[in-house]
Image (cartoon, rainbow, N blue to C red; front, side, top):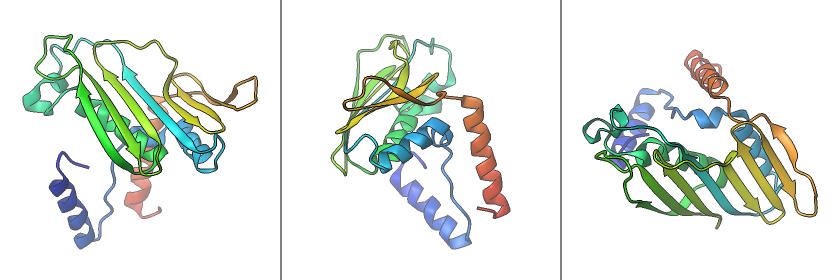
Length: 198
């Protein structure tokens, strides 16, 4: 909701006091395959969640971008992409009990970090890793992988799928990440809330 806990608490308190709805805008909560993955995890499809992985790593020239200007953005890839990554982790794994972030050696000549890794443990005991980079490209087809005691689930850029223990084949359940559809769903939810229909 904000950069600091006190600021977020003020927002929540103000919303309560004036009787308004306070919403966080996170496009990934509106990605159909993320929503399906959340249902599958909650229903125990892949068993007890053990490992979580997320990677947002792609080479992008950040030398003249606003989000690499510390005065404007406040930080680098960790605050820019990491906010989405941690939100997805909380959405799929539940509340986080412990979290740690590390910065890698800089690649680009910018004043903020361009590569970072986040490690966490959820309250349910799942362990997670998140890789973020504007300077390294991970050639992987999925951006989220969930490993459970009964199988593996992937949410991908172009398709999503799962494979249960003892099965030879993956089962597809979606067409991957659709940015425009996610924003459309987010805006529709916002409009529905404003109208009081939610």
